[in-house]
Image 1: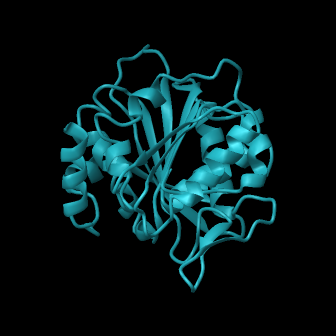
Image 2 (image 1 turned 120 degrees about the vertical axis):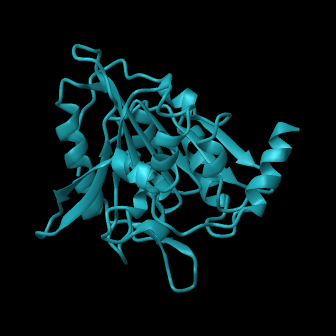
Image 3 (image 1 turned 45 degrees about the vertical axis):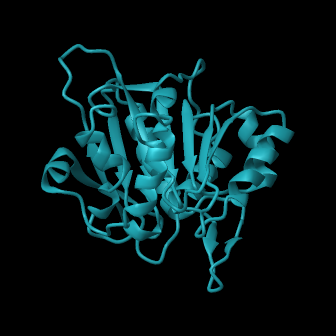
Length: 271
């Protein structure tokens, strides 16, 4: 009954395209990181209040969806970053640094993007986009900070950011302690590389998603399992393109994500 009530609620609440409220804005410091070619990628970062001498804290990397693109360095605070500071089951339970980048307008996190026919197609050229290379440069910088637990670097993204999450798992499979791609998809041909990284993955998708069809997740799940990998996969019945509402909720996969830890040192390899 709890799941049924959640499904009814999530399907009747319209999407709200607005920036984060003032208390969320205030919780995240602003910054930029350079992109190939001389431009820069905006980001916001939340640092938890921890006592001096405390143990290193995890790092959570969040990749937003297409609707949050731009240059205001604010819209990307919707969804996970917003909930992180306003809901007790997230930030209050798990002190962590949360890093939320903003992809420029008309750009995409990954080489898989939506064409004029509203279909998701691959423009795979074997390398990361300049935007994701900038993301990884900042992640590498933060991983060297003694205040960050470099064996607990987590990755999550939704929609366009779900595609970006799969792309990072393909090119940097041995960095992340866990990954939660949501309503995205990736490159099934890279399954063996992803499996070799041994990153625990939990994928989430609504089976009624009309923006990114659930088949994009299913093909990645099948490819990973065919390559000998194991991953969690949750399909939400009757849910459209907002499966992140459950994934980041109190009964979603956040607790699972934070329970994961790399047993080896992360390696920043590849393009």
